[in-house]
Length: 163
Image (cartoon, rainbow, N blue to C red; front, side):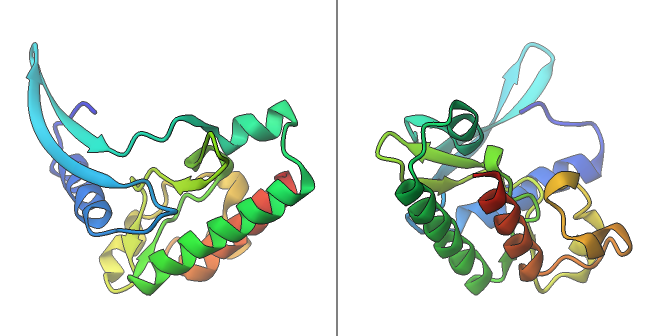
């Protein structure tokens, strides 16, 4: 990931790493390490994470290969992962089918914590406008600080409709 020149870009990456680093649940893609590397004139942040061989939920939906029983289990596993995140004081802020990885055994791995924030830090709520419009709860269009765990649950409902 190329580093942006701004302090805000760097602090956003640092926040993503700090949030993801402390998460340990079977439905969250496991974070192992991060390091800064130089590639030519660019400095990049390299994230080392669990390898989840499979595909994105968005791809599985488009291919039409999910059975009804798979969809039920996948929705339950996403809900379990979100429950874990919320119990840790984390709101994902960008739950969508593209940010759900499926292993070859169709096990759920929630990924992409670039928009995530803590429930404690009110300053983060202003930065949480990076989510994807189609999966955002309606109240967010009026108030960019309205994100709460319920917003992630709304996005899960959109994913369930998508499936």
